[in-house]
Image (tube, rainbow, N blue to C red; front, side, top):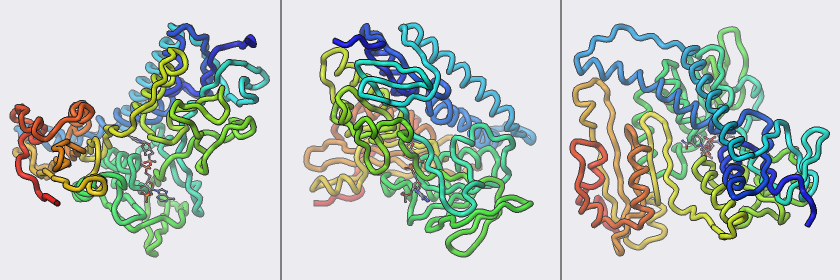
Length: 452
Ligand code: NDP
């Protein structure tokens, strides 16, 4: 066998790349990971983690209002963006160090620089060439940048984590995870937000009741405009002028373009060595993350299946089991719980009502909207939505959906039950925890509609 420098070279030290490097090294493989930016990738540096820290910062805006109803007299709280931004950055730098130690503890060699694949077994970083029996592409993805006139005045999500000044006004373009999350966070932190979505109703692929409910709730604290798109941006003295497709204009301090992400495969040299990419630039892999070049694998956001950190982690584990533990392991992508940290939160797992009706003859829907107990003493006008989708024939729970505080925390637990194939009768047999919002899921008795 050829004498390679390493058994495995991983390109990209994000969630999937670090997990795969670490687990492969633990099996005794000689591993190197190459990273051009900070260790931890999107999730740690410019995604999930700093976003959630900003989200916690924004939640205080509700706490001040709620506290009043509970007898607290809080005078004029002031928000300081620089404090939140810089405390966040310190924490992220600490995490970068944690990632470095995690890798070094299992003897993974960390190589800083931009990697280019030059053959089926070789990677170049600058002038230096490294060889490996296998190469794993885990380079993630990046925000799609707009191409309308004046697009240079728009920011993307990467920029939001290091803004010099907090905007008084912001226009957010898009109707997916990132647009909805930043709309809630920046509104909570005190900016006047306008969110624009090009279609009829945002949050495509979520349950329709969830989409309508979130729109109703968000409209209470920001300006949400559907069927609206941007055609041009212009810089003016007083801000950025946003020209819309309905001939209106808006003036704002910041424009966030949050319209999807593209796989990071440009300049990696993949097509040149025979790795097939799809039209979007994503690496095409089989069930075991192997590309069209047998020694090259790929996983995480760069394969564009589910752009979620826990999915990349699971793929990393399954890749290592398959390749280094001789246990071929596929991943079941059917039940992936997810949360959108918009305001209010969405938590969801399994099928939407529309997906269930396409697949099953008899679908039963159980749902409820209510004011949570905590808000009965406050001036906050919010409503929670809980919804269960059930197969009427087998009684199996197909999907559960929630909009409200801590929806992600609540749905994570129910995701275990759905993974185990829980039935509605088992939900009914479960004792509730009173008084909680989550108990509603085990006390919903009457279906809203029964379709035969
Ligand atoms: P999404 O795919 O979630 O949403 C993209 C949005 O942008 C859609 O509303 C889409 O509209 C709209 N859009 C696309 N192209 C254009 C365009 N040219 N002009 C105007 N609007 C456009 O992408 P995000 O960027 O929000 O997030 C990327 C991914 O990152 C998510 O899908 C998710 O997997 C992951 N993520 C997960 C988070 C979490 O787990 N909490 C948080 C943040 C991101 P349309 O529906 O009409 O196509």
